[in-house]
Length: 253
Image (tube, rainbow, N blue to C red; front, side, top):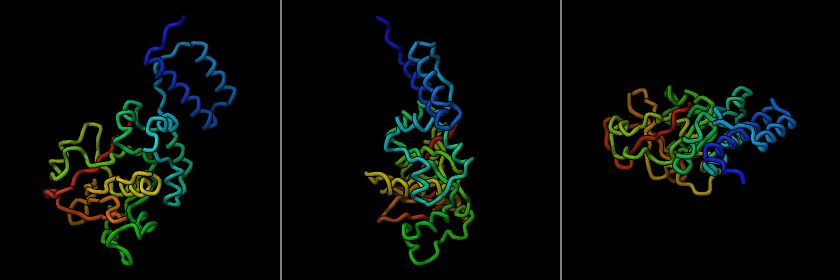
């Protein structure tokens, strides 16, 4: 009776299998190549831990309902990703270990190259205090700056320890692999999550400081679906406000 595979060997087997699937989907391997590769694995060819990039297939198995791909983003915002963007989205810029650690606390979203104004133009009725009139941020530079298309791993709640703190105090709770995302990234995640997830609780209770600054030097915050509408405002960095914390996401590889 043969020995049982170690945890590392099983992980490497899964990595190799998923990589074969990714290459087949991308068109760089034929079905014959994939079958031959699988047969090698079954026959017991030496397996070492793969350094291959993480594929959406692997990420989906880990993140489950907390993952929204480019097709979800395209459906929600009626956008078309360029071939270059789709090619980049074939690789998840986070390790298996990071995804496993964040599977419940974060949401993995394929963000599009959209600005906050692009999002407002698509969903004007989903922004509070702007119905029937232009939003206060219409002429703000941050609101016209497009996010970079790519995967974002965004925490679904305020950064632990940051609620009711100032900007600098909250920043002390950021890990070395954490960063504060832009308002556009958070708005995309909240609207996609609201449209497609069953349990809608992302940022519902809190105001989240983002990385953006308004022209008057105040920090932009966003609230996810208070009264079925996004609230976007700004406050000074040195203010303590109840239920105000930091938005955070993981730094990509």
